Length: 209
Image: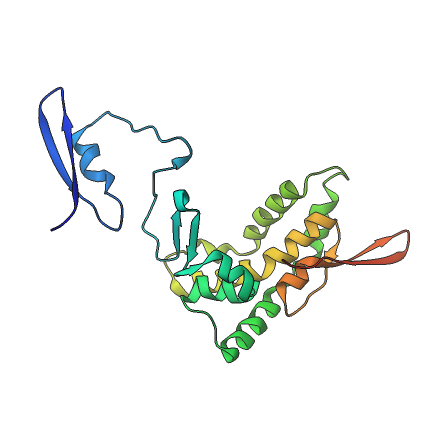
């Protein structure tokens, strides 16, 4: 027996039955049934904008899954690049898959030095890194006008890869107002940096969790 909900408009006595699918109901039927009635849901706590084959969330149970894997298991057992591969391809990579994936990411990790440097110089020393990062990410879009063709699967794949590769480098640059070093491990790329102060090279490293 299919599960469903019934909505009754007490003003007219009319009712509508809407099937429950994948734990939710389609808003289309009830918006037609109740024109002009808005449903207030602060923070979208009970609203899904689309069906997702990637993410499963049960806030009440404190459960978050990516592609069927619990987030705590991925955090303990998988690297940043492995999880990125999982999100894009639907499965965790084999050893050979991961080597090829890391090679592709490394080729795309470089930022346009002139643009990135000019952008960072536009901020003062007290600028919040998140604002700098957001501005940098927006600026990247100006370099790849073909990314607007979202209907082309090959172009989508190309720029998903490009974004995954560049975001850690951009985030490190924004957070440290310097240039992150390129590394095969993008988590290390984000957490390892080199900056110059009064002509001296200063390096730093944080440990991933």
